[in-house]
Amino acid sequence: MKLYTSDQVNDLHLYQYAFINLSVEDHVMHLTLDRANKKNALHPQMVNEIAYALHHAHYNHDIWMITISAKGNVFCAGADLKAMAGIIEEHDSTVPDPGQEVLIGELFNKVYKPTIAKITGDVYAGGFFFLAGCNIVVAQDDVKFGLPEVKRGLYPFQVMAALMKVMPARKVIDWCIRAYNLPVQEALQYGLVSEISTPEEIDGAVQRIIDEIKQNSPTAIRMGLESYDQLQPAAEAHQYLYDMLQKTVSSKDGQEGLSAFREKRKPEWTGQ
Image (cartoon, rainbow, N blue to C red):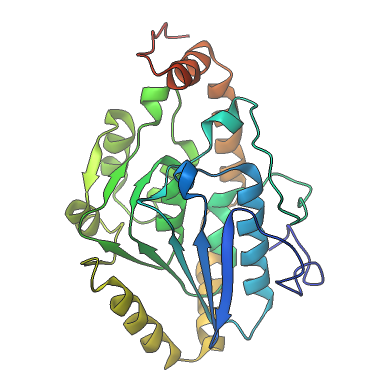
């Protein structure tokens, strides 16, 4: 973890958070996305807050694992397209800017603590960084999973790479280029989801997993996850994919897709 030093993240409650809620209880950090009015779309400062929290968990050996959940009926709609177009919503977050681009696809790989995603709402686009990055994903049986980027003149470059770590490559490509909704049962079949639960039982399912992990050595788990990270391809791939996204956004089709999304109309593609 290189975005923040251990001294910078020593006190989790030193700053004000605008887009997430945090609590730590009995060795577990609970991180909740709290931008339901915007479908938990990833505002740039929201990403900074998530990065700050995960860095704190990485350095703090009293935190043994992390749960990630979200308020509202959409777990995460992906990147904030208005922000991508240069329209940045004002906020009262005081979490410091790390001073460099946060590659969210890399964040979860470097925590070296078990991460459990509790999915109680639909997931789209960049929201899959959470599912692909977490070690365990428990999803409600009524949620929808979608990759709509190509309908907006974009492409899920980094998401594609993240998904290929947990799903077959051919299925990921098919999903990326056809942009359909993937049923939760198929997500389980292809390895994106670890377990499916009902809305009434999902809290108990997550707690059961937490209790199981607590029976094991947090030090051994931390070292094991660090070793797994060292076996993965170089991090430079995420920077390349981020750069490709920026290139796509600036293309004529990319600008047309974003304009059509804002204006709620069908885009007119030119292939440029």
